[in-house]
Amino acid sequence: MTPTLPALQRIAPFLKWVGGKGQLLEQFCPLMPASLAGRGYVEPFLGSGAVFWDVIQTKNPSRCTLLDANAEVVNLFVQVRDKVEELLPLLGEHRRRHNTPGLSEEDRKAYYYGVRAARPAGGTVEAAARFLYLNKTCFNGLYRVNHKGEFNVPMGSYASPAIFDAAHLRAASRLLQGVRIETSSFRDCERFIADGDFVYLDPPYEPMSATSSFTAYTKDAFTRADQTALRDTLLRLASRCQWMASNSTAEFIESLYDQPRLFKHHVQASRLINSVSAGRGKIQELVVTNYPATQDRVGGMEPAPRAAQDQSRQLSLWNRGGTDGPALARDAGSAPSPDIAEGLARRGLRGRS
Ligand SMILES: C[S@@+](CC[C@H](N)C(=O)[O-])C[C@H]1O[C@@H](n2cnc3c(N)ncnc32)[C@H](O)[C@@H]1O
Image (cartoon, rainbow, N blue to C red; front, side, top):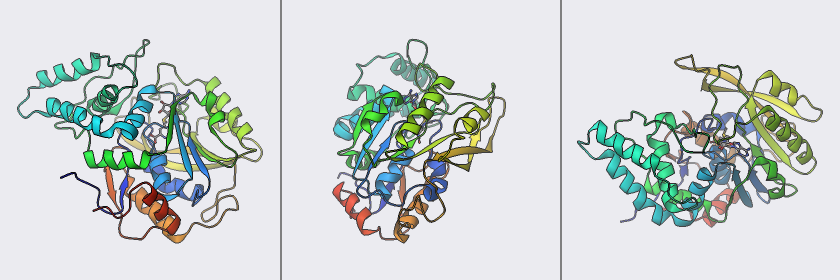
């Protein structure tokens, strides 16, 4: 029997991603519009899409566009959307080969490094399965490539990594129906954004210091020139849509966004602070909006319907702990507001059992 999601389970990211925003959803909630009914949503730095999964399940946007410069991330989302039934057996085979009971560490490594060395054609379901398998079995879910763009992260030391959950991927696939997903640099994102859209941007963070751990996510580092170009893009967009951007509190970034009619907020994240520190610590992160955001109101928009606020809060509670948290999150029982329920039903996610 095909496993399906029980009613009102929530979809969280299926990818582990450094800098994933799962743990910040609760703090983002009061900074974002309560509903996006009748408006488009665009996310130019998708990664694992923690904010997108929250938005599509709680804010009912009229359409969504997801962009990232990392073609492997984009291909995984595209294949989950379009070919999930072809993807699942390929993932099942990776899981079987990696987690075979009694497999020696040497044999498991041979399998991992064999897959890592393989070069399936880009844009295929095989490439997507390889990418998700490596993501879930490599060291800390890191994404790092050499100058030729070849993934070079060593195997992680997980006893029996889950790798994927079929019901989760099928439900994610349903939510992704009708979502536009493209490989694109943020430098081209303006052409994907219509007047009145809501845009959330989460670029690679400016490091806080020379010793900060930093992941480029693509073979090109995200430079200060990129940070400045992004700020300039946002200043242009400010006249035609609402946006929210996150970044580090590095001095360079703080001063980049010291601009009239921009609003700075600070949230608390739990992150690896630098490569020397062994553990995680609390660190402040910057959120900039081009509208005044307060606890109950965002830029003069309607107050959040109670049910939507509750749902966002519940989702973020479930998502605490980052993108590697529970793949499926169970709602504590409140009914979704009518526009959100309608949006979920359109995507085939209401009343499944
Ligand atoms: C901080 S991560 C986004 C994390 C995401 N918000 C999440 O919750 O998982 C930054 C993303 O920007 C992407 N990226 C890096 N350089 C880019 C560029 N020039 N244009 C667009 N995306 C880029 C990376 O591939 C990465 O997925």
